[in-house]
Length: 368
Image (cartoon, rainbow, N blue to C red; front, side, top):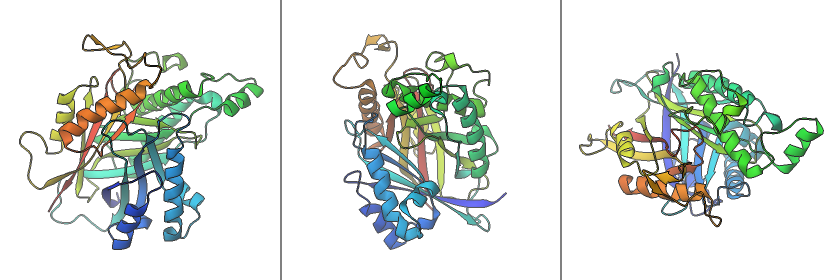
């Protein structure tokens, strides 16, 4: 098995088109552009179908990186996994997290145990009528297994976060399916985001053995007892396939980082956030020589309209979508416990953790 080293750097941005921080890191030698495998970001859009800050951010990054890699912007987008999550409500702060990976001859003598590793894979392109259905689930499961192998992770227990960028439906895509005599899971572009996120998350659960493979189309967005404890999925208009990024710990990694996770049962589950922090050495009695790099979490409004017996209005607000409410609530909770608003909180947690909750993962850097 090959030995790799992984780098993780969080960079603040002043807007979706701001690449100055990344370029400064590259200019100083802190980041080798040829080693960049993935970039996850939070942009200050609405997180909906018409959130073009995501596409703008990806375009800006690809244009900036193209001359550094000797590629066209389109080739950069094919080479690097870009996952931009729209919505920085409340105290959430726009930023990007850059993941790099390089092969090394062997592990340094001072590194022991399992360290953070990253792997990536893509599904095939989906037909519009396959989104939110078993075809998307099955293909995602295959890609998760491929990404685990790419990361050098053999044990599913070592997988702590699976980030997926998945497609959504547009009116043109719905019409194209209808023209072939096919019916899509929904005709609503906004609702299709939930179907795609949910099916992708169920694909993660199947791949990791969290649920069985006997999933039916009608289980998506209905059987909320079926979920993954590590899946984080985000829908976007800019693609028709799933991009799968697996983050975990591996004995084949020589990185300075570790990742751990916990599962929030609801939007105010502070103990779960503390458990995730404790899993990588933080908490009431923090281990010395560790630096918090970033926290990644999913947020969802409880579908029964209440949190711990008290009614909430997130699902009834016609001015602000429930996903925006959820991001602000969970973002504020995590920021207060972590001491920073520059955390990655994504809305829409269908089948990503229990209904109304979601996974939360923490990356720590171990200082030598």
